[in-house]
Length: 183
Ligand SMILES: CC(C)(COP(=O)(O)OP(=O)(O)OC[C@H]1O[C@@H](n2cnc3c(N)ncnc32)[C@H](O)[C@@H]1OP(=O)(O)O)[C@@H](O)C(=O)NCCC(=O)NCCS
Image (cartoon, rainbow, N blue to C red; front, side, top):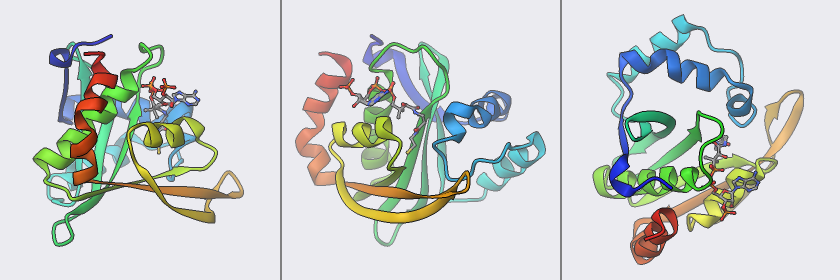
């Protein structure tokens, strides 16, 4: 089990692009994402360059003992309403059980403390039971169920929407940290 001091989130850098593209194009990640075509390096670099001027999105690498193992990202950052969407994935296989929970707890802390978000929103395909359970474990409330919402491999799939407010997170913060870090 990683210790808190061994885990961090940091901005994605140019040198990470190959690693991130390999993760993003892997079958395990693509099957759970809205966009699921194979991304070329050219497209990936264009995305990275656009990000530099985009104040509505933040992409972070999650590192354990200085090794990148996953991504947490915030999109549609809406300053007026203090809300945004987030997404996450573990890029590496065979990580110790619980690594995802640490990634999630770290991402929530970043959203509420650094970005000063009031309402953190997320969505998952209904078939992605690991992610649906994950949102619930992290304290997110289910806010919506969009029926036959997104075309995925020829089928319109249902999407579940989740949200967590900063005050609810503050109330549960210590408990979540204990769960994540076993402290
Ligand atoms: C979602 C994700 C980050 C969770 O990471 P993880 O390493 O499985 O996380 P943890 O081991 O900390 O498990 C966290 C919780 O997720 C749920 N979970 C994890 N794997 C699961 C599985 N195979 N089936 C059902 N629930 C699962 C459980 O609720 C688990 O809590 P528990 O251990 O108390 O039962 C990871 O599964 C992932 O990267 N999935 C692919 C990408 C993806 O779906 N991203 C989200 C898109 S919305």
